Image 1 (cartoon, rainbow, N blue to C red):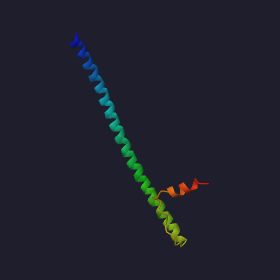
Image 2: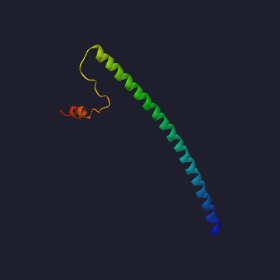
Image 3: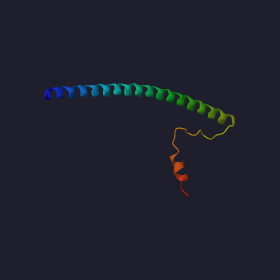
Length: 86
């Protein structure tokens, strides 16, 4: 009787293992899809940033403004920290 119970438990564990394996495969596929999408969005973001910098540069040259272009890659943490103070 014990052998039959152990065999049943083995089958249950095998089914659970198979189910978890398939779930893991799905997660890996979804992760790869999202990674590719993130890469495309990053490329698009970089292209837009370059375009914006070029437009700002042209605008600055037309006005003969000697002020340097702001670095759009810098975070504005210093501005936000000061703005919360009364």
